[in-house]
Image (cartoon, rainbow, N blue to C red):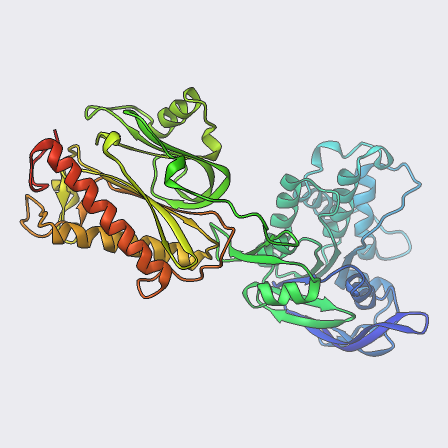
Length: 496
């Protein structure tokens, strides 16, 4: 529907935009990105006719836009410029109604029902329906921005050009506005081309992206193809980390500080505190974590780590809230704590430092196998909870990427299962070798300072050290529990 073919133009004799070509089909939401001064707004002005195109062609529905009258062009293309300077005091509704001007015909144009419906729809979509009679010069910058978005929407053109439409808006109104624009594209087949300052918003809402650099297109394609660390870093000259949105398959950018942390944090067994109630470690700065803990499971950052002993008959309505309350009562902050629990006496925890070359890590294990099971054959309906849990912490002095965290989880789990098999611990119901217990928890934490450790599979130095450390500590923790209970295997229903 909208097509730019090798267009060139700018200000005076200078060509800010040079040989740019792209298209936006009906129902497509296209985002334009780029650093300040790259030509984003100039490109919109060339397409909208606010600046003359020196060479190339802008086509609307297959026809050269240069052949349209101003009013005819306005019926086909609605434009929201970046800045609005207003010295008038008309109402919000009157301002939005100006968007219907291209549809007025004849010497004495009248206001039709279709005009009224268009204005009301636009005001509702922009979240300004409640202050239609307010004077526009008395509105905040964000409110005024929404009024002019509504004016563009009221135009009901098949093509919508927006220059940073979320400027001045808070996050709730950014969401409302972009949801409305996206629905407009999908439900009414409007072709939308919008400039974005925020890369993440553009990636979330747009079907395709155009990344500008120095008046030309540096990259174009789907958000997955454009929002990549190497491309964004090169064009913007900034350190970034690209991640996937947690709910939808769209990329998101995290801005990274200019330099890496020079002073390395350190985890050492000597800094752990062990009492009858808990194993506790508090770092001098947050560690990056992945865990199956009770409190703050999943991926995150934490400074305080707790392995808490609870009574075998422990019961609560909300285990996470109860654990958070425990953390607060013991002087911690739940938001920066990873906490797990066990019915195993934590005073017999095994905590050891390991080192191999530049790789240094600390492992903590509390273990009992009172309810050992084989996860490959056990059915959930047959599981009965009994005391007996293997809780494992692997805390690494180094810098790990996402894949290394996942590999570390796999390596540590395999090492634990191998120990159970080697010690002859079996699932009492199936008679098969146990892979763990019903309530095991695992934590991988990294200081994210020190040496770069890109992999943690068993064939790497880090992975081999994790496997050996978890294996030795798990075996020792089980033997300590067996020595206390007088049991030689984990087949007893209780550890006591």
